[in-house]
Length: 390
Image (tube, rainbow, N blue to C red; front, top):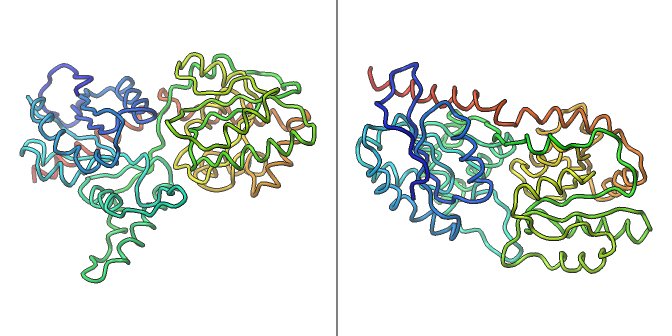
């Protein structure tokens, strides 16, 4: 499905704005927000070909077959660059695409990957999807990761996967991918969250926010276990639970709805963005207990709105939080999380540092990130054009 087609224009001359074909096999949630935000703020000309966000395994196996044909139908004057993501087999796409597209430079953005994404309990990893990510990285001119943590875990997992091969293992593949890799944190629209953020130290009872997906990798069991413990101690607090839900979610959410009923402000997914922003602005503390987080979009949103974050001292969070503030906002284990959260809920805590952190994360607003993206995309297209002319 084509959702955006900018005006026709001739192929790039070096130094001019460029024409980009974006391919998104899983257009939903944060993937859709990212791509729409990128197009809306970019100085370049974009055509977006997208597919609905469902059946991710089939998307990884079959999206290239569909998008090759769709791409041929819109390739009227030639694109300067293809912008793909980790759900597309770039190897298949380039092998099947018409010549005008097959030889265009490809930048692949990795929101996540199937080599190091943690599995639900009881499931075994199917390495064909991780291998698709691996060959996609090799078939791309540049590979962009949303965090340094993501880049490092992908390359470490790729090396481990290659070590499982019985023979004929090509040497140096992780190093080759690293040489063409770049860390590019995503842009976001933070204006609605900043506009209503609190400027004063909040008074108890404070509102604790869960605005993450209701899934196992966000580790809701640990989050609610801490809240149950503090509730049994008689510590006053309120609770707002939003974030995207699916057909099935961990049973601890139902338990929490019952055990914390008298403290609940909101408990359930809020699809309307304006209402969601209002709930985030009204909260005071955001907590993550995630076992997996390649970036942390929901945390950035809450921090921008003025929430005091308490985050694990691992994953991508040590990148997001400045080193001098690790002691304030990061915790090492569940015991330390309980202690820090207890102090906050009793009205203690360096709230001036949370206000400074809210200013710090403004670097992720599209207004402050788009030039980095536009310049990097133009650099890839121009470099490839010069190499082709030699």
